[in-house]
Image 1 (tube, rainbow, N blue to C red):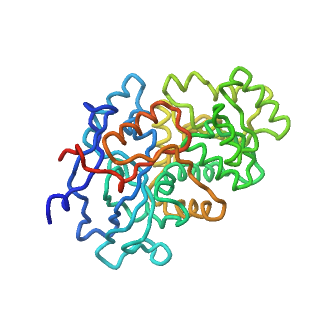
Image 2: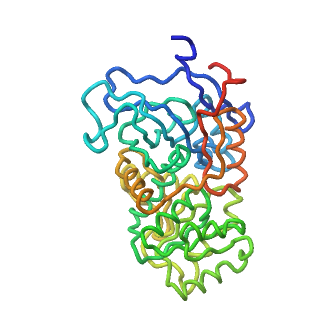
Image 3: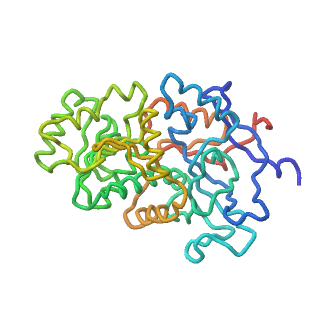
Length: 374
């Protein structure tokens, strides 16, 4: 076995490089001989998410300390979701939920990796309870960009008991999570109202939104437009705010204050039904408490949803059902190779905050030109 057989190409965080990331060769991942709970996957494509370009922790620290995240992840492989081919299964008779979800060498799969394991690489060993069979009707790139956003939506809608006939407002309906949320909710026979920019209005309608509001034109009168809609369709049962975060650029929109303070109300009085995907450090801590011990410290109207990866096989299978029976499709903004230029461009595009849909990294089209050894 030569050196190339013992190594793999991988992106790694490197704070001295442009966008804080580069591509190198690392020791190839192997399954431990006695491992009973992981599967080795040859990755075909990986999804790129804002959490990756924010160095995992950057969106959870105070804005003045967000740069410190670069130091904590130095040398780690970015990435959380992937699609690929099973290369090796556990060296024993055990498999997660024998039967329909039993995995065998050569199976096409998709799923998520635990924090700091990383998916921007050619091989990965992932827990069996975080991987499922890939929908065959999706390309590798589509499948790779679905798990993180899709699991976020499935879990948020379940936790807040969103049902057919209800009304959902999606803020950022054309973004990475928002465009998936819009499709899933519409497939659930929920009336979806989306908010996005001018260029993505048609996209919002095509995803299944009954009404799409343009924040760039209607911003001063956006709340009036929402009030007019509520008069026609009824109060919103849930808001999924994919825009708000601790970043000052997001806080300027002030969506939550505008919506939750209206009289008469445009949001029902259900508990914790204004759901955000980003926020202040204290809100991330509160979300962590809810995830780990079930203690909900949020105010009655508000909650920060934090996706859970362990034991997510059933949620991945639910996503597959939406794909196969309701034509759920991730919209791809870009497909880029796993090269230094490709990964840096992916981060640059995410940080520009102007992507519509998802960004995928592909493994097969990349080369080793200029790649260093670690």
